[in-house]
Structure formats: structure tokens, C-alpha cells
Image 1: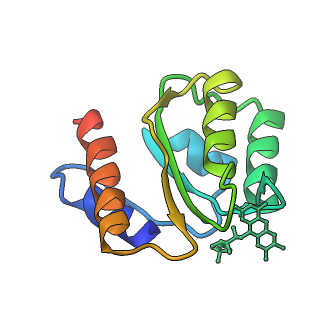
Image 2 (image 1 turned 120 degrees about the horizontal axis):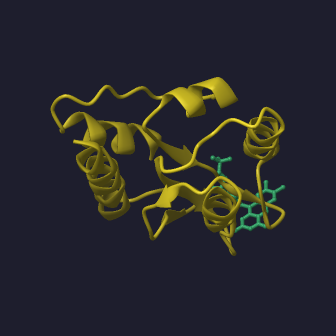
Length: 127
Ligand SMILES: Cc1cc2nc3c(=O)[nH]c(=O)nc-3n(C[C@H](O)[C@H](O)[C@H](O)COP(=O)(O)O)c2cc1C
């Protein structure tokens, strides 16, 4: 899903795109936009993303006005991408592109296309 989001974003000229498996608060702060991929475990976002958001808050990194979106695979409830967007909206005051893209366990071609569209859309907002 992340690679499809990246592909879509790279379709837009003059936008620098990078795919990170582990991001830092500094990387979020220095980007104009970011899209977080997160699966749902025990009805929550995964610990690495939780920790990223907590560290970002502790460092008072200013994300206000950045364009953000989320996606993720899930099994039966799939709350995590929505939780991430709520935190980005309420705590960090970012611009949210909705809805998050969800895949039930594995993305099929239709979902991958939605991921490409999401990446492209976020990149287009920037130019
Ligand atoms: C320990 C465990 C807990 C899970 N809890 C949830 C859950 O609460 N809600 C849900 O929708 N899926 C849940 N899942 C399913 C995962 O979200 C699903 O397998 C997802 O595709 C995992 O993505 P990943 O392979 O990128 O980690 C759980 C899976 C495991 C192994």
C-alpha cells in the first residue's frame, strides 16, 4: 500500500517523495505533507506510530497546516488510520485528506489504485 501511495505521489512533477519505514519527528516537521500507513492491532495504532506521535508532541514539533492522510490494512475493525487522523487534526492541527484507505488483510488492485490516487491527490495539493 505504501509503495502504491508513493507511486501516485511521484506522478506529480516537482514534488520530492520519500518512503520511510521508520519516520522521526524531524522528518515530519521538515516535510510539507506526510501520509501515515498503520495497521490496526488490538483496536489501536501500532506502537511505532504511537511513539512517533508522542515524540513529535514532546518535541513540540510544529506540524500545523501540513497536508496529511492515512491508510492501513486491518482484520476486523480497522480503527488505527482514523485514530491517527484524529490526533493529527486535534493535536497537531494538520490538514486532513479523508477518508483513510483501508485494506482488509491484503490490498487488491482496486485498493492499490485508491492508494495511488491518495498519493497523487496529496502531492497535487502541494503544487
Ligand atoms: C495480535 C493481533 C491483533 C490484531 N488486532 C486487530 C484489531 O483489533 N482490529 C483489526 O481490524 N485487526 C486486527 N488485527 C489484524 C491486523 O490488523 C491485520 O492482520 C493487518 O493486515 C496487519 O498488517 P501488517 O501485516 O502490516 O502488520 C490483529 C492482528 C494481530 C496479529
